Each structure stands twice: as structure tokens, then as C-alpha cells.
Length: 179
Image 1: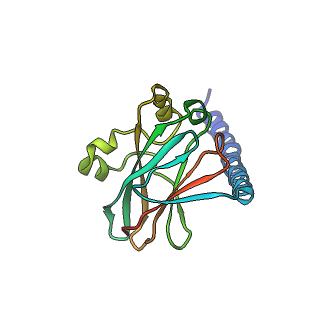
Image 2 (image 1 turned 60 degrees about the vertical axis):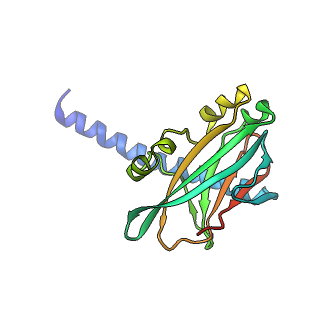
Image 3 (image 1 turned 90 degrees about the vertical axis):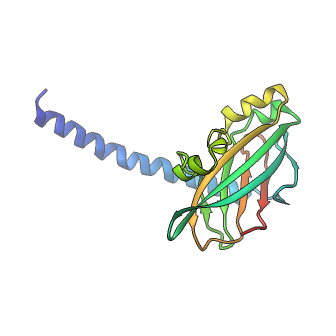
């Protein structure tokens, strides 16, 4: 193939792939918005307190603010789940978000931030909340997980929101009192 032909094929692929990526993300947001709108029950607990939810006993162990830049911080959240019903726990897909007092939502970062690996290497090695981490709960042992978020430095009144669309219609919210 010639370079010109390859260029036009790549350009055409880009023209198709970009709108498709936007459409998929928009569809996910609409579906999530519908789920949140029809979703009614929230279980709100303080960090450090255990709570039965989606086939397990969940507990927010700690949340720490770590440096990132002048206007942003990394928040490291460590949580633990002890299975009470492994079948229910393995049905869903864990979705974790951080929400501040202004209602802004922050998704977990995909890759572990270098500051987390440097300051808390044991937390950086922990799995993220998801099917692979919860598969280890099948043997009845508690599973410790860690998530990291990048938030504006002025973000206050943080809450960790855990949703399990496949296993529970409820949402578990851990309030973090130390902002």
C-alpha cells in the first residue's frame, strides 16, 4: 500500500472512531443518569463504620489527601469488604466515585499516581474495586481495595459513593469527616 492510501484510510478511521467514541460515552452517561434518577435509596454511613451492602460488609478504612499540584490533590481511599453472600457480591460491577460538598463527581484515576506509589506502596499494590478484586472474596476472606482520585485542592466535604448496579439497587455513601 502506498503512503497516500494509508493516510486516507487512517483519516477515515479517525472520522468514524471519534464520533463513535463520543456516542458511546454519551449513551453511558444517559443510561447512568436514568439509573440515578430511578435509583431511590442511599445508605449513608460515616467512614470507619462497617455496613452491609451488596453481599458484603463494607468499610471505608481511610481517605488521605496527597500532594499533586498547586491546585489539585490526590485523594487515596482504602476500603475493605468482607463477603456475607459471595454469590451476590460476584454478580455486580463495583463503581466508585468521590463527591465533594458542591456535588462535583470525580472518577477514579486509571493508573496509580506516582505519589501514591511513593508514599503508600502497599496501597498502590491493592486491587481496585471491581470484579477481579471481588473474585478473591469467594473464599470468605476480606478484600482490601484502594482507589485514587484527583480533585481540586479546594474540594471539601468528600464522600465515597459505591454503586453495584448488577447486585443492588441501593447506593452506599461513606461520609469522610476529615476534610
